[in-house]
Length: 369
Image 1 (cartoon, rainbow, N blue to C red):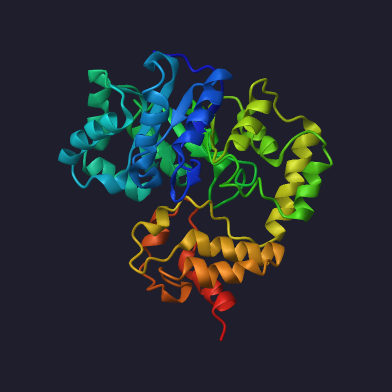
Image 2 (image 1 turned 120 degrees about the vertical axis):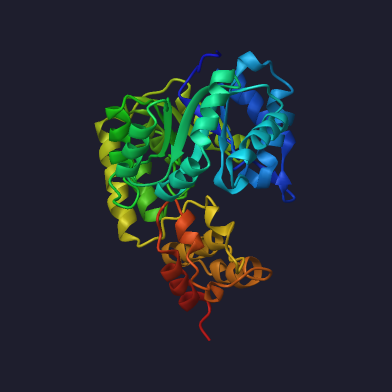
């Protein structure tokens, strides 16, 4: 089994893009920089980039480096199977798409109370444990998006789970909708190593409003992303912090402070606490643009893009937000007012946002006659 070298991983949900496609030239350079600086953990899932993330990693990683030089994580996602008989063919197709013979880690993807019920009904956990026994995966785990009580239920029913991937960042740490701290504490209680996703909350902790960014600038110590990444990585039991990087610039910034990692000191901890206070006063929509909500939308509404327009309008008074709303995001897709209130989006939202109500607010802001 290849050893994990450091606690910073390459999350492959937000890869570099060019002309609407994954920029494999840029990705190849980024993978090279990542590996050359002593990092070796890669995380993907079949739905990422519409199924293209796995293929891109075959082109840029697995066909170029020996298998014992990197750690590869993939996931079983709910949209890709409806019954147990679907899982083995899907798993085989994932191995082929990625160009590997086994996965180092295989996670049950985005587990919540509802999805856990489906995975149990389809005996997905049992099938994954068969893959473990067969040597086709080396470690078995889950990625999780729900309340701490649900996580405790899953870990109680399946003690074979080896690792848990949770959303964990300083803004969500005590957020009652996400319960980052409580989920982390459940992992510690059950002795499960933690993999952190969304340490920068989908970029929201990087692109801070000017009045909030000033708090971190006064520290004179690093980028906005650095404080978010180091916050997450500084907790005991955190084995990996994933970063979704869309450019070499992001890659090199992450490497600069994760190569010789130091946790936040007391002054920096106080600063991120202040950022949380100011952020919550902005009344922003806490969408991370994971896009799970768009998959089943019957009106084809680009929900994360419309929320981004709303946040830009509220936070920056950005006049461009109106242009993007009317001339980009709703030209060939639904408007906020087209929402049929079916609720599918809210069922799949990891942030548990009241999307239907928020779309009403968006419609009032951008569709005024």
